[in-house]
Image (cartoon, rainbow, N blue to C red):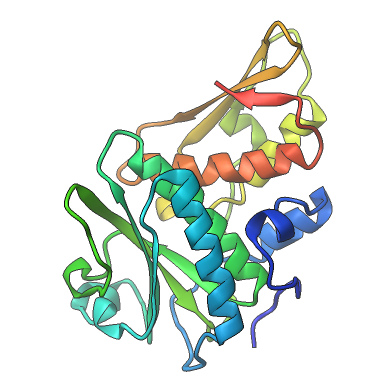
Length: 253
């Protein structure tokens, strides 16, 4: 049985985006990558909550995310075993129209589903290479790209925390100022975001304010081996949630 916050079967915005900073950070801290799953099926009410959120994400993000159940063939490969995956029956296929920001959108909206799944007692793992796209039951329309997937189900264990960088390593603020509480909360949340090989190759720069007094934040993907734009999308969602739990007087530029 997995650990969760026992939230109702609500949407992401109803159950996650409205959490206070303490509960939000607890949820993010509970989420770890899990690669070994038990045989427990995803219950209908949990499935419906995930599918509702996926439908919302697809509409907002112009994507074609798909929850694929009972499709172990996608992880029946030497690469999957090399990646220590075991008994992966289900996955979320991250698919969308092939254009410049597709990977970042997949990261941002995919992580929304991941956090909702965590709140519902499920476990997940982002997967870039160690599965077979051609064996996935996902439907790919002309002009769409299958970017990567998320293994999902009930884990045999809850996973473990990994070492993270300091806030100073992944942020910049004007030399004459101090780090605002809302910005620090955003950075703390971003540091809990999953990234490829736990590299955390992103940076958030505080860049003053606009003429309405709204603080400006630039998010940057730094050079990395793979999945840099996906990782940036994931980190941006975490930053947004953490910062907004303290103040919404800011925006990305």
